[in-house]
Amino acid sequence: MIPVSAGVPAEIAVPAVPEDDRLWVQQAPDVWFRPLMLNTITGQWCNLLKVTRSGIVSRHRHPSAVFGYVIKGKWQYDEHDWVAETGSFVYEPPGEIHTLRVPEDCTEMITFFNISGAMIYVDDDGNQIGYEDTFTKIQLCRDHYGANGLGADYVDQFIR
Image 1 (spheres, one colour):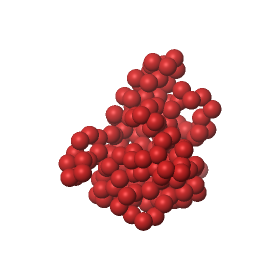
Image 2 (cartoon, helix red, strand yellow; image 1 turned 135 degrees about the vertical axis):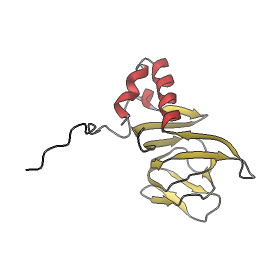
Image 3 (cartoon, helix red, strand yellow; image 1 turned 90 degrees about the vertical axis):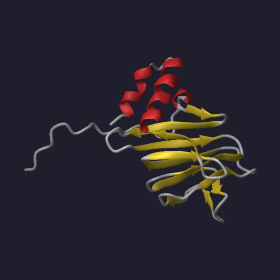
Image 4 (cartoon, helix red, strand yellow; image 1 turned 90 degrees about the horizontal axis):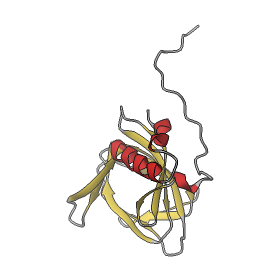
């Protein structure tokens, strides 16, 4: 018999798309994320991204690969000719700069993303203008949940 390792973090099993809208954390106008797992050891995070407007969401790059699965709606990168629609799997190679856009005919997009490292926001010349990582996500959640009645420690269930 193989013994269970000591100190193994608990599993997470939650509805991905929540019934309670307070779980969505706003990160920009009409742009929210729903944390699913925030790993402070590896820097990985898994979340849903929800956008309820058309147009550019962000121009960014990642130092590590990103994996996505479109749950609802559609989106695209201005730098490519494909459109990620409901049911699409997306692989993003590390280092590429891309501009996420929700097309005019889409009123809501929800995509699951598995990200390691950081999301580095860049301007049109490729200069860094901001970033997100596991730790900035945790702080956004603490501020949001603390203000909406769930409590700042609500996010702790997602931290590994």
